Image 1 (cartoon, helix red, strand yellow):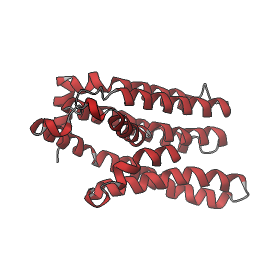
Image 2 (cartoon, rainbow, N blue to C red; image 1 turned 120 degrees about the vertical axis):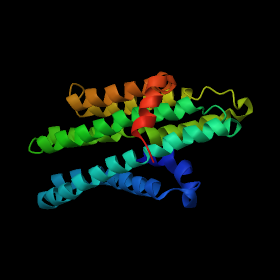
Image 3 (tube, one colour; image 1 turned 45 degrees about the horizontal axis):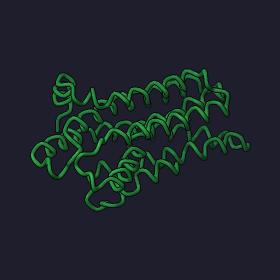
Length: 229
């Protein structure tokens, strides 16, 4: 929760009034999702199972909101590629391929998020199994928020080198942090061999392909074909 909020703080609150409605809804639903994952285990382990189950039903609605609002924001990535083409000096190292790559990996992250939530429902009667599928969703959707924050710090520290900055370096560091936190949690709760752990590690390793995916003309054409305003 703290890592996610610190990562998104400047990018979201810095231009709060200029953000689109979809951005606000996605931020709110995503933040509430993290809060749910903090309070639900408390209810489940402190004699409040009826409340936990009721909240769980609401939480499934919320999870759908997180995924659907993330999908609804993807057109913004395509629009940004067009803006970066017409105003390259404004975007510097953030070339069109970067935003195409972000859209490509976000599709995989959102799909994996949905798969993890569905598996948590299927295994709802197996407490630890159910819980770990839900916990894994944190690591599946952390990259966009945390990555932006680390990129902001990286750009600020290297502003003298603008626009000749390797913008992928902070992404690599972000993925290292996320995978480290994931494996630390999996080790603590003895879930290193759990399928949810494999899924989360796999998705975060896939993010490392952001640049080749973004530079692929086939991927670019596919994204422009399916993501329309």
